[in-house]
Every structure is written in C-alpha cells, then in structure tokens.
Amino acid sequence: MTELTASEVSDAKQLAEETYGRYKAHQGHYRNLPRNHLLGKLSEFAVEKWLRSEGLDPDPAYRDPARDRESDLQLTGEGIEVKTWRPDTWDDMGRCVTPGQAPGIASAVSGF
Image 1 (cartoon, rainbow, N blue to C red):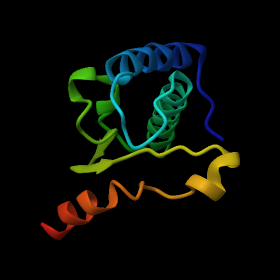
Image 2 (spheres, rainbow, N blue to C red):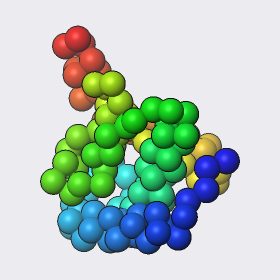
Image 3 (cartoon, rainbow, N blue to C red):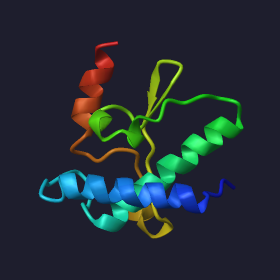
Image 4 (cartoon, rainbow, N blue to C red):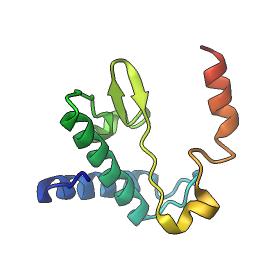
C-alpha cells in the first residue's frame, strides 16, 4: 500500500480546489464534484509515489495547472492517465472510459 504524507495530502487538496474551480461550470464525462477532484488528485499523488518507489522517474504533469490537457503522468515518453473508482461505483462505473469518450479515444489510437 502506498501512503501519502500530510504534505502530499495538503498539496492534493490545493490542486483539487484549483481544478474544481476551473471546471465546476463545465459539463464533463464524470460527476464534477469537489470530492471527485480530491479523490483524483490523491490517486495521482499515490501512483506517482508508487512509481518512484519502483525506481522510475515519472514527470507529474498533473501538478502543473498549465499542463492539465496532458496525461496525468509521463513516463519514458508515454502518457499515463490515472483513473479512480470507489468500490460502490464499480457495478455502474467500473470501466476506464465513459461511453462518450470511447469514440475520441478510438480515433486517436487509430492514428498510431
């Protein structure tokens, strides 16, 4: 298990407040709630910390608001998107992308 420090949790809270503030008026693929932004940021911090514990050196784009259109983490030139699901949402939302996102992702992948 990867545990976050109080400082990491504080940083995640600050970033979550920033992203919620930026996107609260936008309708998206997911429920746009402050707690969901926090859950996402905590997860991004945890994945970054775990990758570092494995000897890897990810570039945490999620920490820079100016890079919010990039993948959450970059590792060896590849983007990593961190997705987080609560256990009570797996039956309904236990997928990596929403149906509305699937066509765009399929189109992007077909370009490779």
